[in-house]
Length: 257
Image (cartoon, rainbow, N blue to C red; front, side, top):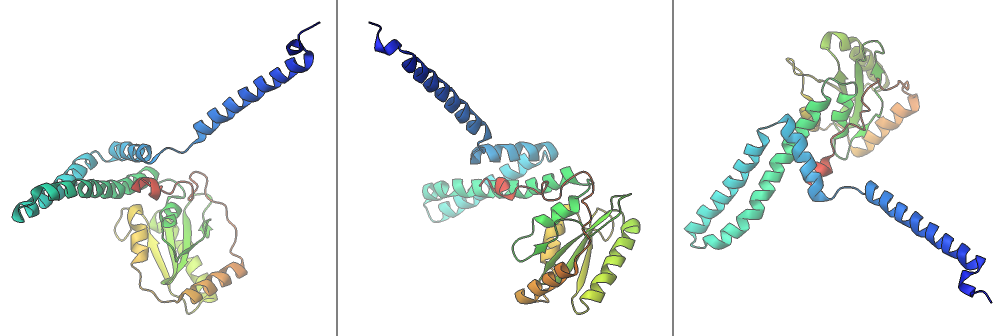
């Protein structure tokens, strides 16, 4: 009589179990490959990217760390408890170095995308809460790829240009006239990106926008945006090249979170 373990049913079950185990192993391998890097790995990646574009970041981080440790040691010596202050100074020094890294990393990230289509939209995309951003440029020249991006917030409507001043001026003036006709009582601000006179660098666009004087309430901001959406701004394509929302710097990675 044949052994029951050698039956065709058992062989088929063994093959199914083997196939299942192989599939599980493949799924685990794929999940491991798709797993997001840990915090330390993110910080290391940001550090390497920043150092390639800004070699001085190493010395600045070291200087910040040593300055914090030195200040804490001086205070510790004055109060005759330098050991405790030294222990406290180490994490504070690391925090200071990480802060320097995050600031320089943001600048390096913008330096990498400077001059590419959609870079001004990326500069706007790092704005904090309270701003309503238009994903696509509200005005664009398909031939030159000059563009105008828009944000709505408590200071009013902000137009951020991309392209040389003499070329993008026509786009800005047309958009400003349209906004003044639609929203006559809402202030319109224009920020030109670039490194020329009167222009704002990409890394400073968000800071410049946030410094604008608040003119509207939160309810009025929502009403302005609703009116703009209801009037149906022309859906112009994003210039070929960089997608503004895919090239924005990863702020969480910069902070190591």
